[in-house]
Length: 236
Image 1: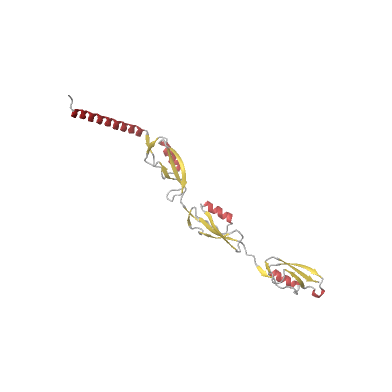
Image 2: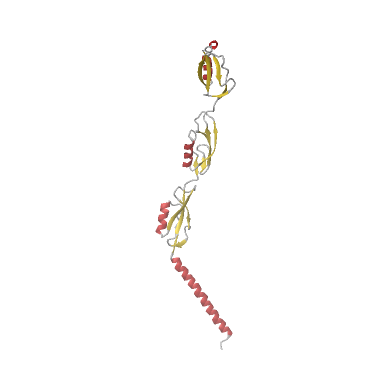
């Protein structure tokens, strides 16, 4: 009759063989799967075309996943890859590549003397945007940039807003209308022209005030602006 110890020993051997069989099967399966995998080459730092070539050589599929600025990698170089280099993956797996757009820093262009539309174009070419604008009267043409911040040539991160000061042109000049009634016609006209006003002379019959101003419009003391027309009635 078989003792209980013998039975337990036989059961232990059976369980051990079963566990060993499972482990062996797992190892064999992993080895089989590993044989179907390939190592992803390191392509970070390579130009995109070369990186794609190396990935295709080993049986992987490159795909450009986007672009980003990077100070350490020139424009067009791979700055990130997924899966990473050294990983073991299935053949024909897609490898996503992020490509450098170059340095994230540029020099602010010189916008002074440019019309606003041209200034915006120059900013866009450098990856910058138009920021707050202010306007003042100057002797420069209307719409021209007369100052900027950051200044021209200043190292600036792409995407930075550049504020500008825009010319409104020359400010209108205003005067207080002088009293021209009683002045000789020639003198009244000379005064108006010196003030930048435009005289318009008509004549009426006032023998006692011949060649003198008898009426004016706008009237004495009125606020007038440069180049405004002033009507004079001169006696004859």
